[in-house]
Every structure is written in C-alpha cells, then in structure tokens.
Amino acid sequence: MAMENAERAGETALHEPKTAEEAWRVKRSLGHAASYVSGGTLLRTQWENGLKSMPRHLISLEKIGELSGIRLAGAHVRIGAAARLNECRAHPLLLRHGGLLVRAIGEIAAPSVRHLATLGGNVSSLTGDAIPALMAMDASVIFFRERCWRTESVRDWIQGAGAVREPDDLIGAIAIPVRSGDGEGDEEAGGSFEFYEKVGRREAFTPSLVTVAGQGMVSDDGALRDIRLSAGGGSALPDRLPAAERALSGARLSEEMLAVIHQTIKDQYKAAEDLFAGSGYRKEASANLITSQLWKRLKS
Image (cartoon, rainbow, N blue to C red):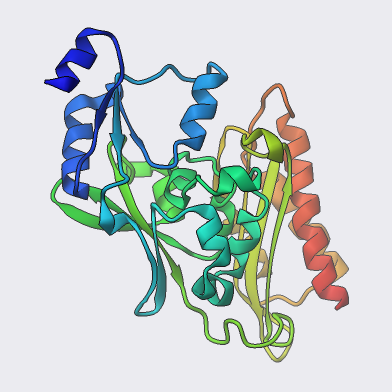
C-alpha cells in the first residue's frame, strides 16, 4: 500500500527484496521504470547532474546477503557485488591475488565515494574505471537472470553481443582467477607483470578520459605469454585489445615490436568521441600509455 501511495503521489517507490531472484523479478516486471541501487553513488551523481531522471522505483540490494563478502572459491577470488570499493582495496585476499584491481580502485573518485560505492555498481555502469583492470585479469561476472545464476567473462558481458547482457541482469559477484605465484615477491622477479594507468577526471566521479590495463607473463627465454591488454574511457565500452595481444604473444620485447604494438592499438581501439576529448586523442593516449609500460619492462 505504501508503494502504491508513493506512485500516486509521484514519488519514488522503494523495494527491498531479500533474495537475488526476488530483486530480478521486481526489475523484470517494472522494466525501465526501476533501477537497482546499493551504494547509489553513480546514480546520485547522474541525477544531480541531470544525466538521468529519478526512476519511479528503486530496488535496494542492501538486504540481499548473497551479494556480500569476499572469499576464496576454488581457483578464484569471489567478490560480492555489494562489496564496497574501500573494502576491496584493503582485503587480504585481494592484496594477495588482486593487486591490479586494488591499484585501479585507488584511482576511482575520492575516499568518501569509495566508502559507499560498490564493485558491482562500477561494473554495472558499463564504463567504470575498474573494468579495464578486470578485463586484463580475465575476470568473470556472475549474474542472476530468470531462475538461475550465470557466468560470463567481464569482457563478453560488458560488450553484450548476442544477448549476453540483458537490462535486468543482477550482478551477484565478480570472480578473479588466482594465478600461481600471486603475492610471492615482486612481479618482475616472478616472471609476471601488470599495469594500470588512468588519465582523467578522478574527482568528478565520471568515466576517465583514458584508462588502460595489462597483465602478462615472461618465459625463461624472454618470450611473452598470457598477455591481456584493455582500454576504456569516456562513454565507450571498455574492451580487450586482441590484435595487440596476438602480436605480443610469443614475441620478445624490442623497440621495433613496441612500434608495431603502438600502431596496432591505435588501429584497433574504438575510442569515444565527446566534448572532453576526441577519439584520436584517446587512441594516441592509450597506445602511448601501454607502450610506455612495455618499454619499462624492456629496460628492466
């Protein structure tokens, strides 16, 4: 009755489901008139800046216990979608196995925002600055749809081709693979490397101008393997850079190879074009940031 009265008064009705399935069914029945909300930082910013109107229905996820917690699950670290960014940044499991994500979270907004914002909210925004790091880590998203939980790679879910992603999907967790040697000494001594770089407007809690991330291994003979590179920024959906990954796979770093990678990234990356930066700038900046990190590896 309270929700009916709120609707008649033109106010926003609050729904507080106890399970993921209940939340999904409410969202499914209300469609675009409803939004999931947990930390609420992104939604609040969008409303205040006039980017989105206040929905008629808010579906609070705060009482759904299955969305909380960070734990080891087999060969993955499972991060509940409701985990706050500050919680992720300080958690021992992520400090050991999720250093790239921890680094990315440190570049998202201000501490007061990270205290409220959730990892699930950052991913569900589709342009969150944690997404390139998660793609480089080969992370998966676990989400509820219809009657069951489903799992897709973060990349496939974000890109959304072939109905992999639907508007009512409820993210339950993010799963990060545990790599052998995680947390043992520094990354270079272990034959692995990773990086995260961001150029943008951190304080405004808006998508960066450019964000890149990478992760890989170096064999005993100096050949690169298990290379994953990603880029994002602005309104464009973050994505992996498979052409550059293929060019690096099995190769040894050299100045000539870096020149090839720089051009490959510029050719492949589908950058956003907006009032803050042109696509040409974003392509050039992404290529520069990634090759700069690879150059450091070459000279180390």
